Image (cartoon, rainbow, N blue to C red; front, side, top):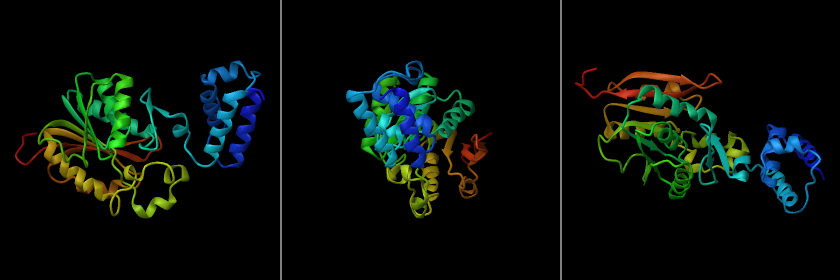
Length: 282
């Protein structure tokens, strides 16, 4: 079978199987199976697919049809222009989460110390560290397995960051940071069944599901931020697409200059504010 024929066959199977972006998915998986980039597929459509690459490609196509995300098959996802290793121990970084990096760099450009709470693969914190070498970034996660992946990403990308295994910001010192950034688990348990099977059945629930109504995780996160932020520090959190009305009132009188940033789809995605304890001059 040629590369062209292999692609056509997989695309047809993906379309019938309800796989989104059928053509792109087939190309990514075939390029991964043969150890080349996608350009190679277009330049050599008549190249024969046989042996181990053919076996791998059949396996990858079967796994994707079963619901396994493409990123867990290939083992990586691009974020902020860099390749991040991903496994089922971490959430797959989404393009909309790049707004978190942009928000921190824009609203607190002179920060010295940054905490990425619930870091998962490390995509947010590592990207901030690589964009601003002057910022010392500490990453935390309750999952030791997730932190192991984040460490691998930091090493492979050359980011000098530190790590701490704890629940949210529990183990961080008081008044230690200029920025706290987080993409917390905010999906309520009752909504789990409505998620796409790729997410529901394959991504780690500890990084997806918030306690109770889901948004309650923000109350704990804000309380931690009030303890570990220096006065004038920035808290930036990612929101679920319907969470703004519930989360924004949680930012009490100590929080000023609240800003909501929308993603490319127009949904409120990042909520950020500066911490100004009572009596602090603005």
